[in-house]
Image (cartoon, rainbow, N blue to C red; front, side, top):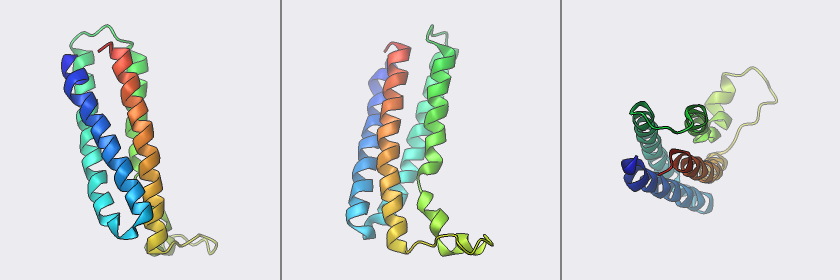
Length: 138
């Protein structure tokens, strides 16, 4: 449990801060969208490490609330598909949908949507990581 509170939790918070800052920068400067995509990949990895470490803590016999902790971990995983949601407005995604009213976003709009989603996911993931920390009693 000391590893989660001492290493994993600060790493998750750092990843959340980086994701939020790059998301804001992408909203301001659209050319940073490629950097945001790399940051999102790193955030997926950090979240995977967080989930595995918490599961190891729970399996090792921690007295924490199992259902509540697993619920917060599941919520952290469910947030991840929101990263990159702007691709749903891409022209190639619209070509696969027969609905003529489907909105098609321009590349700059896609980048700004992705940046906004990154900020929202970063804040939510930081809150979820904090709740897991409190539940584990670290």
